[in-house]
Image 1: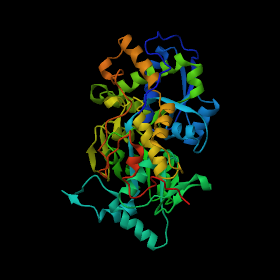
Image 2: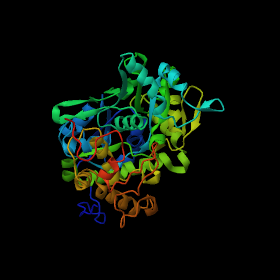
Image 3: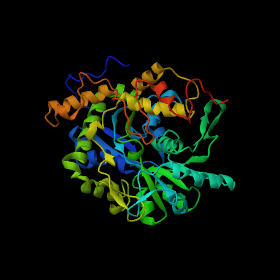
Image 4: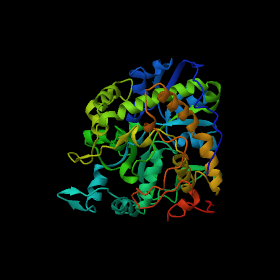
Length: 442
């Protein structure tokens, strides 16, 4: 288990920002909302920070921008700081002091695939029973394989939550999503695959599905709801149903930036904390205003109604089948913003499960990597400052004096498995599909 001297002092008086003109990157997804709100509501300026927000073409461009200093920080996939730090895909020490949200993704299939899946799905009162497991997709995938046709699906990046969630869902239904083998120079992720997953940038998912290049995808909003609005596909499951309140995006900074500009780093987190609280407070009362902000072309740039479908507590599956999911997007409640070590370790277990980490690792290795990337010390300094200023209450944060960084064992997975972040190797042993123990792809 982890214990470490924290370099950021929560009790020291917070000084002026060492760097006050900043450029942050983001991808056009609704979960970039804390950045947009911190900017529009003046929370960055309250901290003496003059921020420019800039949409990035894809996740690789965004990460490269933070590594080479073109960007001071960015909305990131949770797997990106971890993968960069351990040297998968690129090599740079990126850290995160702030988790941006819980949940917020979905898996969509084409109309043709849905038509075949639907025959296998139990119905109640004329509607499919949810959650819809990949067991119902398996016969469809098998029919494609029998006909010699590859069953292609899209995800947004090799170390994205979407890749791991799609793989989790498929494997739970007995569909092998394939392995990576970087030690052999194979980073396709398609070794032994029954469903072939490949990268497509989020805003391009609906068009790629419509073109028939892929038969389904996993992506954040509003790109599942847009498939419904365009009539080109059907979201079959949300990530909330795959793993209730799963950790999602993070705010990433270069480690060197946090060392050179410690006050600026804390002040960035202060502004983001206020934005996250605003997004969730009064039972999501500010969400319609947030949707208006996000719909602007400089942010997500999708229609208000498309963004509102999920951001205001509902989710539309098949056209007209709109259901209440108040926690589809969570930005602050349930300590959503705290950078838990156990969240980091879950991502690392998925990298190991699918071969991105090709060699066996000890539990201590997982703990050490998590500690080097997830930075609750910066978070705590920001939270303590907000409490001192009267902006927030201590009850709105974890109890810092006793917080270990490990959530209690989590049970809300679609396959009934239990995740205990303090036992990463034992966790992996539970899965019939996936690397574990001493397994290495030969």
